Image (cartoon, rainbow, N blue to C red; front, side, top):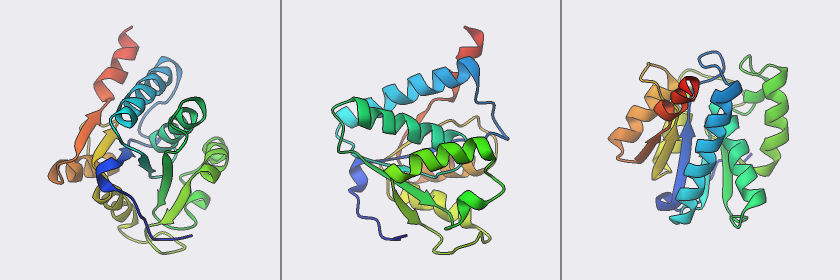
Length: 180
């Protein structure tokens, strides 16, 4: 696993959102997330973005990555670069992955360049913050599903605000799916 990233920050998008233990990814909500992600990602690609960085975690990270892979396969954006920034090498072996999400991970990850941000095999204190900051530091835009609550997504969102990234928070649009 290489730890070097060569991207044009001004053309790079990163993603952040909650894991399944903090958010219900099902039914109309999941359909809405997929629809909005597809639309937002293709809009940014049309604007000249060409690299997408994902955290590789179950939930929003893998859903976003799957949407990007679909765009890469189905549209003219065949040359987009997909990067998975892992907090540590054996992340997929952690308690964060149940069988369902591990299948998603194993299906999607081979299509990405993998970067071990933590440069470690195992988890260590602050490894997720280091991964989150790495993604923001190498991006000009953030697409997130952030409800205002503390946690990893909140940390990433606030850091992106401080770093003056273009932020597209899809949370309110997704929540409207329940009302429709």
